[in-house]
Length: 496
Image (cartoon, rainbow, N blue to C red; front, top):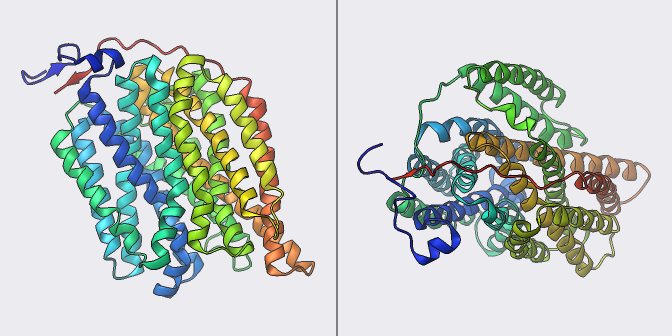
């Protein structure tokens, strides 16, 4: 350790620091990470409402324009598994600056993109920065926030993970109502640039980097595994349409499945030398394994609903983009306002008193959404969506805190990388499941003579029924959730 370094214990603390147990330098870093991550994840879903306009502007098909979202998710899936390695090899400040630089550069390139191919490249650059930021945030919180305060802190992170995607369509709907699609990026650019500037000036190194071996075979297998699975899952919905997918989903899914077996084998071999890309020992931890399983169901339900509701509101109820955003806004706000409160309740009562009611709320919310038809009032949609989002908030914060908080400190970065990678997969799987069921229902109804709007309403009804089935499974699993006993952190890492 250099002379310039100082330990957290040696750093003078204010009264506020003593009360919270979190040094001011750490709170500053977490605050900047939260703000940056919110903007980045908001950006992940802003394109959904803009896709029809981009199809017209660039004269491209639906299959082509989907690469804006598929390319983003694929990049996230490939980069996130390497973040455990990245966070061990490099300092907090270096990782933050690199991630924000990539995101800012990608945002600028997207705003001025002269052609569709350039816009896709810009989205890939944005995703490269986004993929690193959330694991960095999670690892920082787990390392420095005391166990008895993690619930409320991870409640704030839950706002980032869940509310940002939820209000993405609202944000883009407001912009597209009167401005060019380029303003979706131009509006974000100053915030990204400011975050980069403040981070470069204020973020200090709060972790000690160490030399870690890089296994290129693991990185290649990881890219094939998660890239293949997410691309295959994303293609399932498109394959169910009359036009079909450009590549049969079975091919990337098969490549992903075979690569997954080889990837797991490789990680188990590398664990003997303590140098895996993703340390799978985290799954030996029961609270982590159960928490991950329930989080996957929650994220699949969340992203499936996120893509179906705008379709229902615009194609069945024939609302405008801004009206659609306003209908979905109360649910996003309800989740955002409840997440910190739920985090405090977790710190006091543990996970089960929150997770089980949350799972029941989700099941009821999805049950209400199965009643949607051509005559449903928007107030009913708002009520069902708010109930669904509050239920998800009751589940996500406790499950994430409980799953990651029980790991040994040396496994934090690996656990965070695994959680975020599997969340991307769950989002793709949920979207694929809901879209495939909806498309199959539409095809069946139209074959029986139904008009296009009635057929779409019936297809959405079928998809929400299956979502409700998943939620009931989640209710049953919630009774297995137990409070994790967080291990004590021996000594605080250096801050310099």
